[in-house]
Length: 54
Image (cartoon, rainbow, N blue to C red; front, side, top):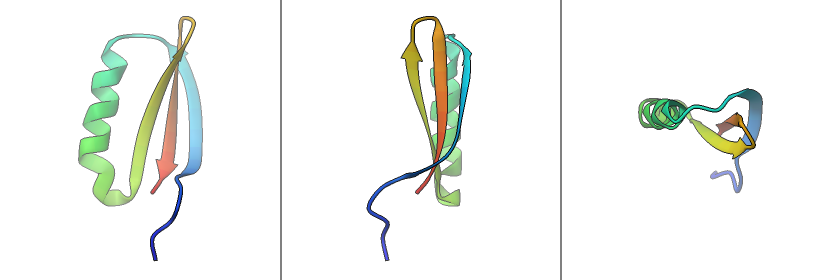
């Protein structure tokens, strides 16, 4: 049975860096088979990384 939406597992705030997008892309490509996905958003000078269960 397929879930209809992602379930937030954790969220952490970091100082923003352009390199964080590369990290999130790497993690998503390599961990999707583990049923997790990462998201990133930017607010002011901060990056918010979210971890979701698929």
